Image (cartoon, rainbow, N blue to C red; front, side, top):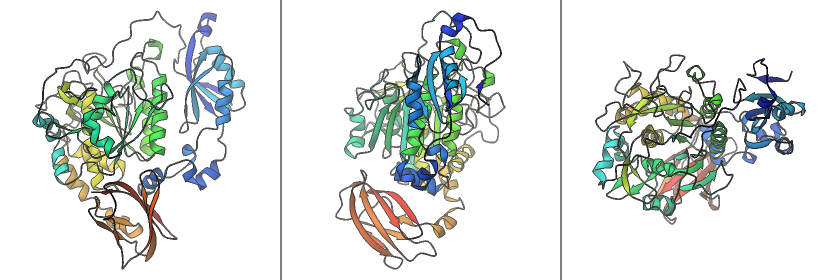
Length: 539
């Protein structure tokens, strides 16, 4: 039976019906589901398929795109604007008057409606939009050498991972933020650009490839992971590859931004992203009718929390900022409340809790934030290539996300939940967590040792091809599963162009790459029974 989700039985005035509302519109069964799942390359990239296979994540109906004819019909309805769509939830995010949205229930393919304002109160008098990046935008412009940036890495023992040659090679990080001006022309990212490790961009707010956006926030966030300025500044994952997605409109605060965030996560999953950093959070909106109460922040209720949990189920590892409401709302917002997300609070350069950092627990009693990193006077590179300091959990999150990516690089076959738990268990307060600090500050040397002790490698190698060493200097070897003795190897450029095809055998398993230029390649190993694909770095 069709129903209105979360719609109370209340008296609605005519003026209430005339106000613009926002809602999720849930749709009927998708088309071509069986055919799409049987031919997953039609809906996912090969990298996404390989990541799901490696982590034993099923490809299911949620991976199939929304039926486009439904979206076309919704767009044609009087007064309705379609802002976003979600394949995971099989829904569209729309705006219109309450009556116009309710009329969508007359369409045969609309099954439910969930209003963002559960009580549908009258729209109040507008208030000035609060700058959610107020803390981050208060700069202390100084000239730093490498040592200044080193503190935020060494606090986590992230430098230990770099010393083990784990700097993010082959890992793909998705960054969801408010704008990324001048990334291509910024000297901090010149190496990323020249090595073709900026894999793609998209603005979900304006539906375009350009991601300049309404804020410089994303550029600074990206720098704490991906920047490299020799002798001056190094991010925590300087050799990773990146997708940049704008999901936030810094000029306003509306719940549609949670829908853009969901859509970006779906795009990230389909592209094979491993780690996602989100230095965004939602609790209060321009229209207070949409505000999330503390009771809403139980990890499963808000649109952003549900999106995060779906992304977690799909095998990605999400890292997010706890928020800067330590002196206001107090508690972490969303998606920081989500069960399937690693939430990062802020400390100062001495590892002491920063008073602006949002705290826990969640309303259902879970520890949040999970762990901490430097967020007070964190070192960043701005949109002009200047090294400066900003404060906020917006920067403790990418500092942590980059190190997490390097850790996962050391054992890419590990599951996302295993990596997250190992990070928590390595932290300074794991045995005695607090509301302010969660489990404390992780030690990634300890986390690395714990990762190497995971008892999953033998089972994995007995049933999969493996490639070593990676990165490659001149050649690499392929180890074979127990029951397979021959295969065909395909070496492709990162854009998918076939460079080499070669037969390979268990007793003749070396592949020479000495004639290839430095960079990233996709290597597929195929037998009749099995296919594994690897991201290979040629040095």
